[in-house]
Length: 263
Image 1 (cartoon, rainbow, N blue to C red):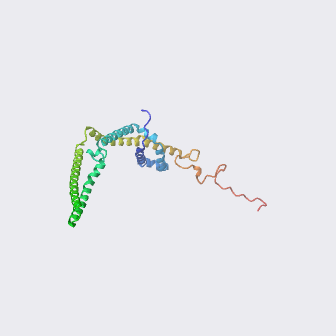
Image 2 (cartoon, helix red, strand yellow; image 1 turned 120 degrees about the vertical axis):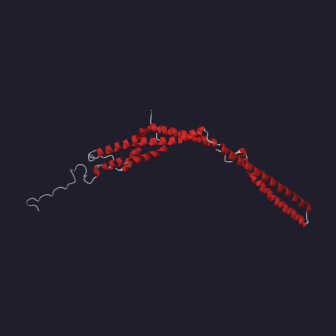
């Protein structure tokens, strides 16, 4: 089958969870208590042996990653095809649509303000009886601004209604086709492939490795005082009975007996 696949970074959390499940199993717990090996060091050794343990479930991992790439590619294609621009459909997708939208909102407001200003000034001058020509001009400009405000407001309302209608029609047309149905069927298959990989990883990869580690630790434990030492504990010469090289032990020498003529 070639070289085993390298475990991806996004799957390392699943690997750590599977390792913790195997360590927490009754079988491994019993062997840990029997051998006296600490569980945290066993976990460190399991994390360090990720390349060795994942190779036992390489076929399941290849199938899982291939199916995951297929599902992600299909989802990305649908997302790109159905995405709508932030400016909305229709004529707003053309360059300069932002300026037109702003003008469509501001023009009625500004025209209404100008109309009110011109009409107030024009009718004020008429009531005062001064500058009648200027008053007539201001009144005419005021009524013209009022008409412009009404027309632009009507155009803005119609454009807003058309934009909303096109958006609702586009959402109604966006119905999943046959390819989308196939992709939707791949989602449960992806979950099953992931579960199959985790089961194979625990049963064929992590569990045999931990059993081998605990067996070697149990064999090395009785000879820890010699030269090899345990795989999980400190050397025997760190104990209190160690007296250093060149000494036979920690037993103190016997006291000398006084001879004749000695105090």
